[in-house]
Every structure is written in structure tokens, then in C-alpha cells.
Length: 57
Image 1 (tube, rainbow, N blue to C red):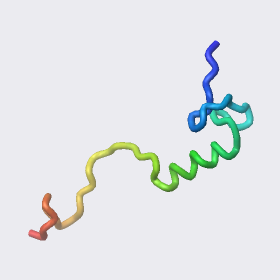
Image 2 (cartoon, one colour):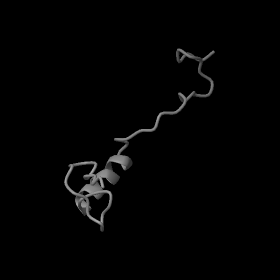
Image 3 (cartoon, helix red, strand yellow):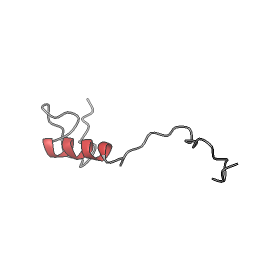
Image 4 (cartoon, rainbow, N blue to C red):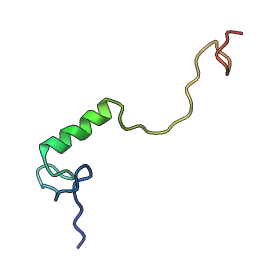
């Protein structure tokens, strides 16, 4: 059986905070998502009324 560690610090996981080791690591991960530290790739955003180089035309 393979035991995985906390994705942030590598310490053994806690059943109460899985997959993290503690409330601190769990909260740090949430703050990283909320602060845009993690990103999911998507199509480039386009602005209305602007062409590809940013000039109005």
C-alpha cells in the first residue's frame, strides 16, 4: 500500500485534513487558489472592439 504525503510539505496526511497534513496546509492551498496562485489553462480572452494588437478599428 502506497502512502502519499501532503501535497504542500510532504508530511504524512491527516484523516481530518486529507489530502493535507494539517489545517495550516489546507488553508494555504485554499489561499493560493483564491489569490490566483494556481491557474487552469483556457482559451485567450478577447476584448470587445479591439483587434489582435490592441488598436480600435
